[in-house]
Structures are given as C-alpha cells and as structure tokens.
Image 1 (tube, one colour):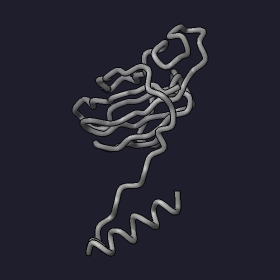
Image 2 (cartoon, rainbow, N blue to C red):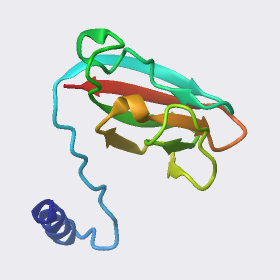
Image 3 (cartoon, rainbow, N blue to C red):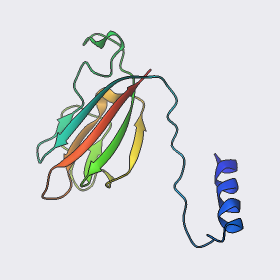
Image 4 (spheres, helix red, strand yellow):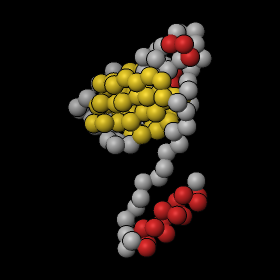
Length: 124
C-alpha cells in the first residue's frame, strides 16, 4: 500500500500536481455476486439479511461487501445488527466507500436531514 501512495505522490509531483491530494486505493478483493441500493433514513438500516451470505440464505456464511455512499452522508456501525448508529459512530461522506469484511454486521443511519443513497456490492 505504501508503494502505491509513494508512486502516486511521485506522479503528482511529476505532473505538477504537488498540492493536490490523490484518493487512496481501496482494497476490493473478491468476486462481486450481488448488489442492492439502499435508501438510508433516520431509522437504522441493515443490508438485506440474506444478500451478502453464501447461497443467499440466512444460514449462509456472511461475506464481505463494498459500500459506497452516493448521496448525503451516513453514520454507520459494523459491530451490531440492532443498535442505531449516532454521531459518535463511523462516518462516510458522499462519494466515499469502504470494504466491510462481515456485511451482516453493517448498520447505517443518515447523517443529515435528507435521506442518503447507498450502493452495496457483495464480494466472495
């Protein structure tokens, strides 16, 4: 990872972009196998319970997921399926994305007055 950042920094300097920050690379290992779009409101919301599970069944082993915030920000937790995230939880802004190892533990709530749009892609 450090090599990528170093190479990106060197490229930015060579192109005269020394003052601009380049986005960090995101580890998206895995094969995509399912996708859903979520509208995150002021109530806690989880990824559909069977979406990111082997076999698409409740008893299937949870898989990883790539989560991208399309509009508005969200507060999220990755340690519970029931507790509603608050402003003390993790935060993702519009355009940001994360890879979650156990998608079954993801829970989100909007961070502003308007609903957030979130795209989820399951990875195996």
